[in-house]
Amino acid sequence: MGSLAKSLSLLFSILVFTCGATTAADTTTLVFKGCADQKFQNPSEIYSLNLKTLLSSLVSQSSQKTFATTTSGDGQNAIMGLYQCRGDLTLPQCYTCVSKIPDMADKLCGKAVAALVQLSGCYLRYEVIGFKQVSETELLYKVCGSTQASGTGFEERRDTAFDMVKNGVKSNGLFYTGTYEQVYVLGQCEGDLASDDCGDCVQSAVESAKNECGDSISGQIYLHKCFISYSYYPNGVPSSTSSSASSAVATRAHTQRTVAIAVGGVAALGFCVVLLMFARSAMKKRKMDKHQDY
Image (tube, rainbow, N blue to C red; front, side, top):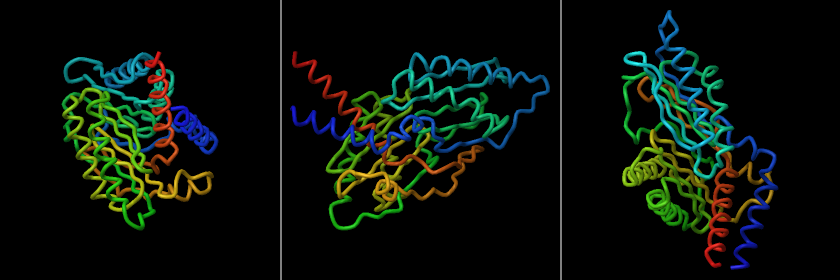
């Protein structure tokens, strides 16, 4: 057990060293945004007031919990919104992430009647009541690494890791990180999903990853109600920022349309987020196991 703790500590130290310059910003990096084509038509500005109230409430709640939904306004003027933070973030980190989104949403989407802003550590979505809904497993955004697996064994390892994340989200509070033979994987579902529905959503994300990314050694798949990310390092964890940068080069997905929300954005997460999440979760588990021994 001592060697395991030392190994995890060493891994975390390496990750902090190689990713330290960007770790603080990683949680607030824009991954993608979706903005409805329709705009508020509201001379009395009641929608604008309701939206401001909604966003203020969501930001405030993010200092107390990592997922929340709320509604502002009444009747046909009502607006529903929610946010969710990544499962490994602390409450202060969650608040920092969510608090960045209102200004970003205004700049990116203006007075759109529905919007989604996905950052690397959290996302926020709002829509007017009655806005057409999409399937829980609708593909919103994908990023597939440009490096293709060579040799044998990748597909088997990746699929085993995918099975782990599918089962893990069902038994670990809708969020899971893990590793299997150098494949690092994570998954998370929206906080109001039942565990079985979460497993089904992640299964759909897994199938999308296989179909969309093929033999790419890394990828991120964002569905409406869940997302997964994976990275494979056949030669071990990269030991320098230059090698990690070259191995994590991603190709942006073609633009998807989800009803009236046009999804576009910037290149998605690099390997640091995946590995830091795994290392942090592993260290937390190690601490819990140690306390249980006493």
